[in-house]
Image (cartoon, rainbow, N blue to C red; front, side, top):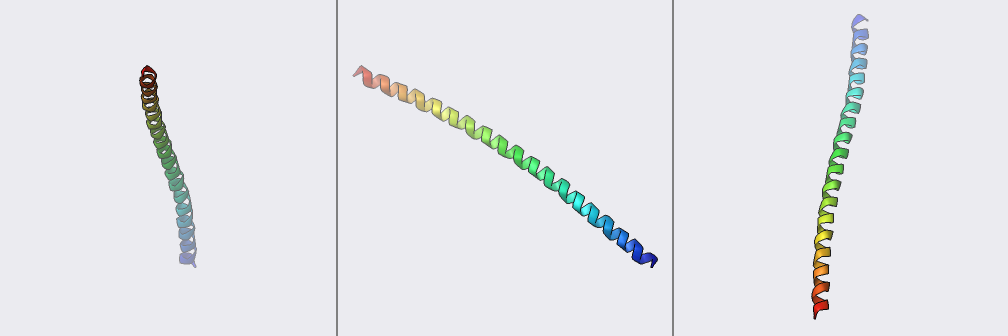
Length: 69
């Protein structure tokens, strides 16, 4: 009987540790994934802004060239 009780306690401790550890790991993973998505979004926005700026300059140059003719 004594060993049965200690086995139950060990199982309960294992399950508790597993559940809490899994929850913490999931939270940390989600935080990391969220930070990565945020960095990638900022990076994409910067590239898009640079592209739009270059396109705008090229368009203005084209308009100026066509108005000189």
